[in-house]
Length: 622
Ligand code: OTU
Image (cartoon, rainbow, N blue to C red; front, side):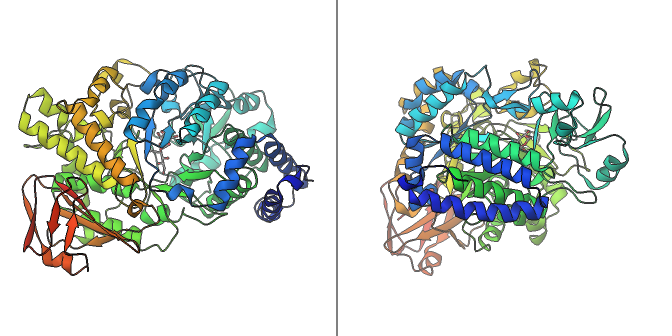
């Protein structure tokens, strides 16, 4: 029973009791009557509840009164790898001013927990949920950093890799010692019979390195499920003991002060023979229980889900109080942006995004241009088919374009191997600057191309900074960092081209960010201006939905947002030529006749017959 001094805080008591009731129902319906396990779980929750720090509880209470705190226009994110950004956690603490200078208020630290030695999938092969990777520091330094960021108004997100652990995790080690209780926390089989059935319908995720989803462990003399790399072993959520352990790990991390947990590979956590083991209904049951538990202990914290799949699967993850994720990666936007940049045609983007709009849900996207992963192309051929385009040929062209194989291509990139049995098809790796042509232009000392590349970089950022949701920059892109092929010299990384764009921040280049004459300064200062504009105008609040505008010009992407007092019209020219749009089109949207370009301060009159946008120009009109 509850022992927390509820007299101090009746709100907590109420929330706790409501949650506990619901949790028990769900737990029993998934796991059956299993009193001992349920009581253990309650014990875990109570202990975490007692252990939550006072300042975090205070914040929990504030946020409970304002549950959509994360929709604020003031939230602007950046993802970084701690070591690549500033060597270690204390290094990052010394760089807080850098985030503040740009206006970043949300930091997603790529995996910070302890991982296996050697290959660790960029930190996604976790060997302990309770220890920080010793190369980065320790838990008290992490807590200290999170506190310091909170004091500066910056929220923290970390990865919670809950589909699998490294095969060096202590749970596996126990399993290796013959402890059946631990063996049941993974998918382990004595014979190949069940794995064979699974393999019939389970797609491959990394076909270039692994052609199977089950591997044979000589130590265990068992077949083990491992859908990502062979050293990442899938956790078995059919076992309530595993669920309890995961809940405990989650609460431990939240009690370090983390605001947002990124649920890595969430659609994959439940497996059933005869299915593709992707986004099964039980995934949502597990997620719902995790939500309830968070609401009981740390109601100021939220989940960010990562589902690289169909529109339907992504949107299905948004939920209400006790369900789903508050934030979801807007993976279709990222792919469409890169597609539009090559084709100079924004129709695919509009149709794809419009499909997201059809879901009348409480939604908040994480909008990004690129992330630490590759750009995975042909996930949604549906829109292309609608446009009468053959998606296979199309993505072949687009990937070749980014590889620099097509005459006139501006980009430098690498691809990942392609396998037709794979769930994800063609993939492209590269930084924003290199994909946009800056690397090539600088190499060629071509000033005109340099200018155009910078414009492209800003154009893409202008969209993630104004489209509905939270923008997420990738650390280093704000100064135009180039691809770094040196990963090929490291045996741990050489077989994974994603390292091409997970680059070390070059602080010598960052030093130039204040000088508007330099490339770094041009990008950084322009982004800073856009971020400032976003944060000072409630039209950018994530609760306002985006409405698309038929601009009558394929190359010009347009959308607007309105609140009671004001309106925002965004126009983006994806072509390398001047583009005109007819003002009448905008008049038909009932927009004001005179609008101000927030970026340049210029007044734009819609009374003129047409409006011209320069190559890759964008306008934020209010
Ligand atoms: C995630 O990505 C991470 O973002 C990757 O960096 C990891 O390698 C991986 O999980 C394993 O931890 O396959 O190409 O539907 O497809 O979670 C990206 C979601 C991935 C998965 C996605 C996965």
